[in-house]
Image (tube, rainbow, N blue to C red; front, side, top):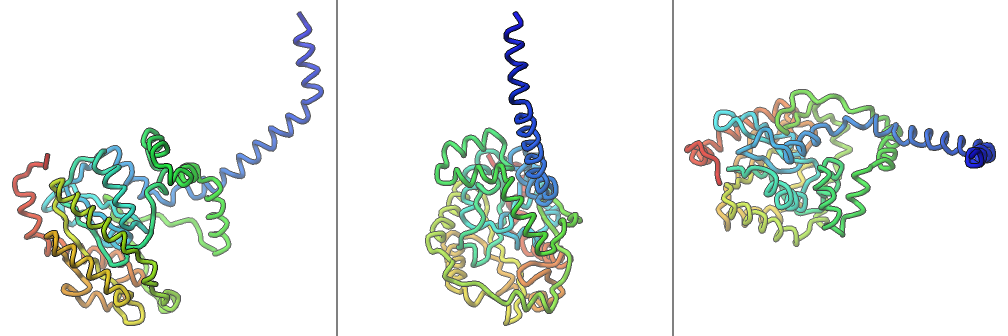
Amino acid sequence: MNSPIRYFKDLTVKWGAFLRRVLAFAAVAAAVLAVPNVILHDAPAMDDMKFSELFMPRVNAELVILGDSRGEFGIDPGCFSHITERAYNFSFSGAKVGFFRDLYFKVLRRHYPKPRVIIYSVFPDIFADGRYLSQDSKRFPLDFFLEELASNSGERRMLFLNRYPVFRNWVQFLWQRRKGIGKPAAQEGPFNGFVPRGGYIQGLELLRMKRGIDPRVMKEGLCAEFEALIVALQADGIKVIFVEPPVYQHPSFDIRPKLEHFEGILKRISKDHGVPYLNYNEELKSPMNDDPLSFHDPSHLHEDAARIFSRTLRRDLEGILKPVFKDGSRPD
């Protein structure tokens, strides 16, 4: 009867010190790996809220804004409240054509009520590689994550590493410490995906940003994918509108002249498919484009200017939006 007890007692005596060291090492390793996750946890809070809205709708937006950081920081959905209270900005920093192709077909179309209108914040550099939807896998519900893991073989590694970003967070944490970057400040005044940016362009910042863009990073193949996405949106009965928010047009920092070919593609798609295109860097350019105090940096509006621009956009879109919302019913 006592032999099993004696056996385990002898085993504990023999291996006890080793097991204690293993457990101590595991505890220290877990604590060390958890440090950057705790420190960086609240940095992308707005992106978390956007994915929560996508998979568990509360706003049920009838008017949706898509785009990269220019749309995220530049278009306030609250300015459209006279037309609909249900507007949401699903723009994401670094998101280009590939991201929104996947976001629409895999998420918006399947998990979100169909909007009446999509305002697509465009810029010629959308035809470059950017953020992947799989980079946000830590924000996916478990069932959607497992579905993507099973079906998206080309991005499984990215899906897994971003779902459990322990080592990546350490790299980010150490890089921020080396650069002297502190914890992100709390964002003031965000509303339904709109993220206002404080701070103004400084002379030294402009000198650092004088690198421009290399047109060789643009990809012709993404032009066809973008056009196919617009065709699909229209086929689903959604009104699509292109909006190009203002950028700082000082000759030293305006990257648009290098991207004339791709600007022409946007105009051609707009014309071929009857998509209104409001370009606030050409036909609708204003003194704001030449005022450094209107910008957080050369590509992004300062929060005050963003709200002014959003009110201007609301006024300019009124004739297009009112007929879409006049009956008060949602599309099928």
